[in-house]
Length: 88
Image (tube, rainbow, N blue to C red):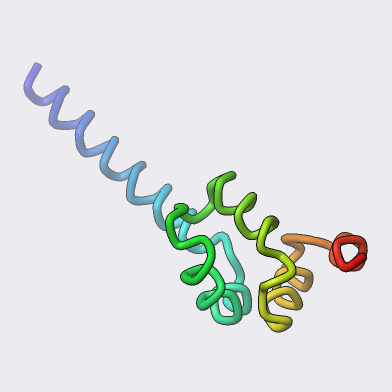
């Protein structure tokens, strides 16, 4: 029984580490680089890959640096058409 729990613990830790590694790499290097300051300034209270973060970035879209918006468009996080609609 102890071997079963030890094996289960190892499996859960392995899955958790793998999931964390996948989550951390989900944003492109360009987005990480160009949006870091905006993330910290406007949305730093939200975890990465959360709906709260996406909502926060959307709410602050007009304040985001042009390089951040460009990186978000190029990485497929948003579209240029959506950005243009938001400007109006």
